Image (tube, rainbow, N blue to C red):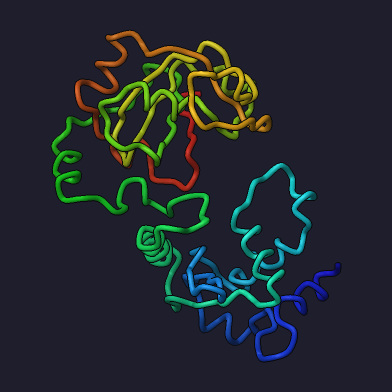
Length: 270
């Protein structure tokens, strides 16, 4: 199917063509959009874009699922289900006329507001500035600050599914399985730092990196093989390392030392 054919496939008939004119795109600037399932009225995806970005997901869904490069995409599966029902995705431009930084903030706030989204990430800066209770904010900003220096080669991984910071086994399971990393570089890491909303909550010593095969991690529940990703077998860092990076209840990391980013994994000093 050609690009032109795919654009036509978005909406046959009617005003929607899957492409904004140059004049309209210029007026929209950066915008935040929602994709809605017309069968139930549910918003299933929130995104930030410019130009024709709002329509790109429907184009991606034109690629058969078996041809996708090893990527599981509930978002694209939902779009295909909508098409199979002979209806079309509904598009809503939620806010427009913004600069990119403002649009990222609006996107992150909307992602927090819709609980059933198929977004792979929570939104720009959401790991630090996203939805939190007042109690949680008081606890976070009363924690001591961690100054990241040149002490060790680190891999900082932001974990978004954490509920509570006191169960080190839960933190360990989330941090070791599994991530889109290159093995050669991962093997240079001395310690893996678990980060939750800008707070270091755990630090672990990787002993072996390997493709993520569920059978090799029998003590982690509800995981599947993801052989294009890496996981590590390891152990909790020695107590002096733990005290330095985490302390008793966690340590805040300055956004200067670890700037907010959309990717979960970031190397430090390596």
